[in-house]
Length: 161
Image (cartoon, rainbow, N blue to C red; front, side, top):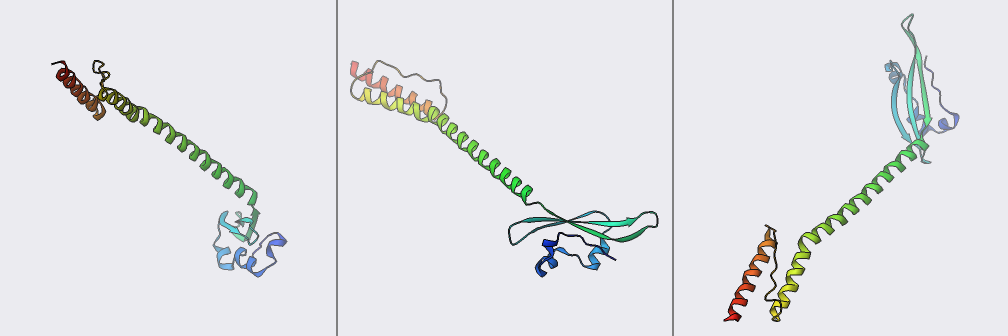
């Protein structure tokens, strides 16, 4: 004999019965409390299904299985909202990191090139031939500044003759 318990409103359609109720073979196989999954209803609710055997340990006899249905829609929505919030915060953090990275790149690459361009424009007009542009950088931008300084020194030496 099997016993199945479910709220009355969940057993009103044959579609529900086919998704919720267990057949005799499945029920006889349940030997311990078992989580049977979740079902999404046509009205959007989320129902969790579990089965619990009714056992008599004294005579080692199984009398049946109680099936429990629980509407977990609220918990499901709370979890979904929490995941969405985590994703939104994560995206905001990534945008902030991107902004900070762009600012650092600008200060390390763009700013020295702009300064060199300004200095080159003043040198091309005949100003600042005596003002040296120094750097301790060892990368390509440092090499560019040192090359410009060699050119400035050559122009200054050429003009002083």
